[in-house]
Image (cartoon, rainbow, N blue to C red; front, top):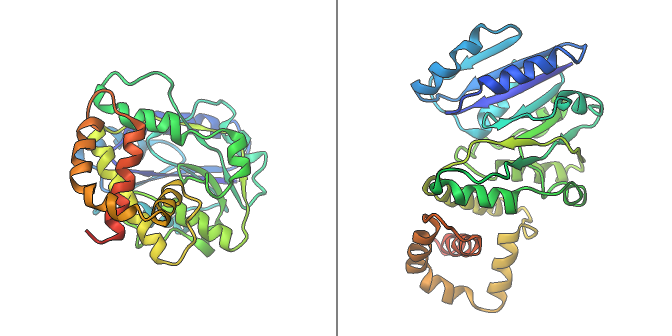
Length: 295
């Protein structure tokens, strides 16, 4: 018995819901699909309106935006079953065995299925930064995930027992984009709750434009600093590890001096049709240094 949980914000989920409904009918056990819309625009609410009339689907539309963490915690009280499968709204399911793959090993407390990006370049040049970063950095091999179960965990595609989720939950002080799933993984690790890895990826379809992705990146780094302030050890995260090595060499102050103008110059390149991931990593580092120095 499984509750499929889809938090929605400004995305068309009709195809995702239809795919999961068809697969749900083939698993020969009770299931439900719950969609909670976090106050999307009227445009997307009208697109997704047909979901409200579909069988075996509960659709809830919120009157105000409550954020990525709180909306996920809402599913605890709304869902009927003890197995909660979370799928982000801007992903698609390609495997016909997607639900069956999860259910075959659903006795584990937490299971992460992974994610991928489409190998074909986006037609719009102003979406290439997000696509390149997803394909080259975010898409992790199954072997990597097996060896780094907590570091590789993301909230876009995972199954968790409700009894476990009630204990940890998402930190609701994280309202904006980024690293709420990092904190959840740290809590799981702290409590010695294992994350089981399965090769059952979904595809990321919600590729943001370069400018929006840069804004989200800065927001995510602010959340990373927030996690650090909670006394969690996040040194294994690449950005933090790089910063600590630079600080040890006493180069952080020099980078701080050039950070403001440097970020402006780099940003122009990142907003171009041929963005560099190396410069993107430098951009993130400079922004993190500024956050550490409260400037």
